[in-house]
Picture 1 (cartoon, one colour):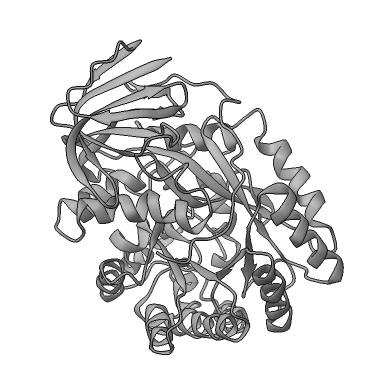
Picture 2: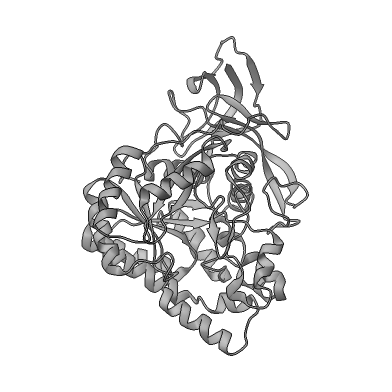
Length: 460
């Protein structure tokens, strides 16, 4: 199939111009003004933006957590992502403590192969590091195209590894060209605060927030940064929420250290006042929690200063009945919220339209930088000759509201109900195939491909 997109405003991380775009097969074949190709489909993109498909490097699909599973699987989750202009996601495989990485990979392949509609890849979460796992880490990088390894500095007894294991993992990953990512919060401090609040009968969702003060994230972010500095390993902090954690990375730049940082759309537009709404606050129980207005200011500034390179979602939805597992105890509320569908439109409406970021920065943090950091650039994350034809045609003037009644995620509430946005993903193309058109998904489960990844770019 061939597609000719005419007269669109093409925006990449580096450029902004009016041109035509010709897609042949699964790749971009030509870019220029007045292209004269006979195409199977011609799209008039006048007054529309044309930018590369979004890449969300932080999602949790069909994930076991707190005795239940996240409610979006690979079919519903990647379909919702496509409606929101995200053409590729990177999910987290969770190693079971005492078991192998290989068995974990097999489990996640069963969840994804034949079900994903959009493209995907995996991070491997290492929850039990030893000599045998060290050998598997090398196999994942060299044989499977899985080059990023998630670690947890919290959730002791289930996911957390200690600092000694972290350093040894970093040494192996560095040697073989991979990347270590981290959930950077001080689990011991948090566990003690949770126990304190529970013992005092303070069980509302507000105490989830009060059990994870800013210092728990700032301390862990600094400690992780120091371990990276000691080992020389490339590293990436996921879902950064606060000024204190950002300052830990900022301080590291004074010793000429580069640490990659991701924040998430919710931390840029929502704040901790939502936890004061009795049990309704459970909709926003996630870890780390929402923070203060001053942290939003710091995060937007960090994006413009180049200290924050990526905006993901940490998409991990649960049905309201699942959230109600913690109705009488905040520590039993499954952590996570639905966001995969709204990231691009929120970042455009709240970021670009409000003057907080430029259009080029928008593309950079929602697509291009993730492609570079996670080893899939320039196949993904840009509009260039030979790249995968992952394209969003975006109407910057389209006004609409977010609602549970219209979203496509498999969850029975919206964390942004009634939120007014300007700018909408109108047409989405995945590898040269029409994915979203006229509010309809044109692709079927199994179309999505696993994308093996190469080494991290260190020049972002």
